[in-house]
Image (cartoon, rainbow, N blue to C red):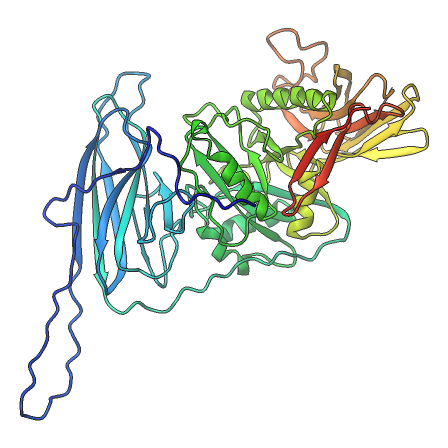
Length: 551
């Protein structure tokens, strides 16, 4: 692998470094005293008094069009035990439809602010107005560790700036004294007690108080167990701080996989399966061409890159980096809404194109993105066929599309295609003579009065209602010459209670919210399997390289 550069190329949003101090200086030093030798016997040494706290106040004004990140330097002398920071900013009234002021905060230590560098010490976005960190402990979202002397930087992220601009004030308090014991991280194990090769349920997008969630990690773990999940992925925004607390909260019955939600100004993405304690930077836009660098970082760890909620309507949430380097895509995020509908439609269209062009197709994921009550952990979640309940096996199942998405643990599903004496399941391929009949079978339970949809590269080819009890089996016949793939959706009845029939040409969909969604089963016609087939090579770190083969 080539050596990564230590700093980004300059852009319009290059680091703005400023330090407007009021009532203090940015160089907070310690006065030193020495004693003179005398002929008299030396008196016992008197311990030096601990210097009092020093507070630095930083103020400034950011106009509309300010850089994405503003760095405020703070000189930290020897002997500092703890750094405490509080901040605020004005929120002037703005016209209707105009964004008001919104400003995030974090901190980098004396090792610098280089993109992807070692200096990161924490981020809380706009969720907190104050934080502290020391060798022994830190506010959630921040990393305990040595308070080294040198130039630290408080970083502001002016997420939105009102037409009047944004006035900020930051107070940095330096507390002196002995550094205290070293913090000991307690990372989760990479294995739980599994059932061998089996289907495992897990939520890959969850937040705690370590970013903008209101649940403690122990509450998230309890919620995962209550939802019947076998695994979760910890994905707090722009920080790895929660990795170090999951160890005692995992267990034989619950695998906890470290991750992060990388929150850029051009969309959010999930890094699933990071090395414990690993941090992935977020300070770039799509035009900066830095995204591939951090994709490579995640892949070297064996992790997955997953664009999250790509059609989320909120500021900076919509996905602008493309899908060429992604390993999967989150098409269902929390309660089913119209942006999930758009995400599934886009994913399905890309699936058809990928198979036609002989490229690797992108698996679909669904996650709760739960932050706090009443958001439900595990609604939805992924049901993954894995060799065992381990980090690597779960990631491998997701990477290869051997998964389907369930609204809750009450939904059960089995989806297969059989023909010519052969059988394939979700995420697998079935190669048969082009015109040999193949039977598509979906058995489902837990969706009373639901609607089953079977979809191929031609669109919906079969629709059938489930009985009031919510359990049933649907069988449909096709051939490999007619369908490049087949996938299944199970929908709830429409809000008015009707199951929905007819076509979707009108403004109102003929079915209700999603209850279950599968990845496809690929159909190959014998003799043509090389014409439209993706050759996939497993590379170190677990990611894939794909090349199209042609006869």
